[in-house]
Image (cartoon, rainbow, N blue to C red):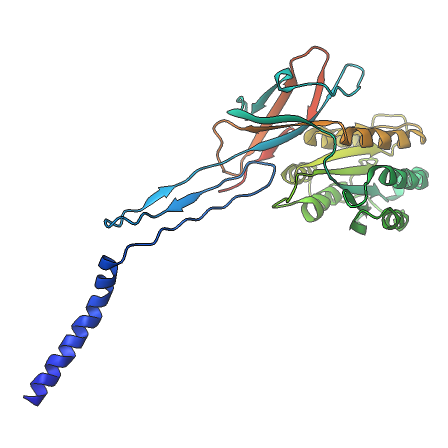
Length: 337
């Protein structure tokens, strides 16, 4: 009898243990779950939310919502190249991936965004004739442009390799020292320098506040050392939402291959290329860049048929008014969900 009772007791314990998961599952409601991810990048982002209701039938309801917003900076000039600052949303037409936007969120003139600048100076042997003047012009530009505690810049020299001689700072003394540290000589790895500057210094996952990011390239554009291609450099600049301004150091008076490269880099990112034949005109080029950085419009919109697939989406923005020219980046890369 003693053995029968012991056997019965063990069987009872085993049954209770095996039944606990079923018991717990059927008598306790599933807790609601909510998760979301958002990005503050200026390019489109994806937000998703998943909810699990507490109904006794244990059904799961998943809600996914895509939120996308593109912020497009652009310049508008008249037929004489002068900035036009009194335009509104109705003066422009936009195509995103060859389709009009689903909706316009905002349109405004932007003259006071914080600046994040990269000064990329070619130190190869091919630019030695104007190197000293270029250095001083760059220093003057930074002193006139950067506002303490608001803007910041870094200095990078490049020949066969690129070197940051001064990291991000708003201190003009440190930036001046960084420019003077540049040493002339060597080959030219222009594409590598742009790629590295955009990826390592200017690529941002999140921003606490909107900023205007740009690199100013001072070079003859004759690349002969880069490991990445021109197309890869442009793609990285577009992913980092960086405007490229280029100042040519070529003083031959001829239209060379490097001039075409500088023009292509600028056009693809919404910037501008300058070709100062005379040394004194280099300073005027820097002045024009400073003026342009303070004279832009921004339009925010939701693109039509947006997919978070990582694909490149071309942008076309045109002015509806006669004799008005618009300059903006050529497109962007959608994020991946």
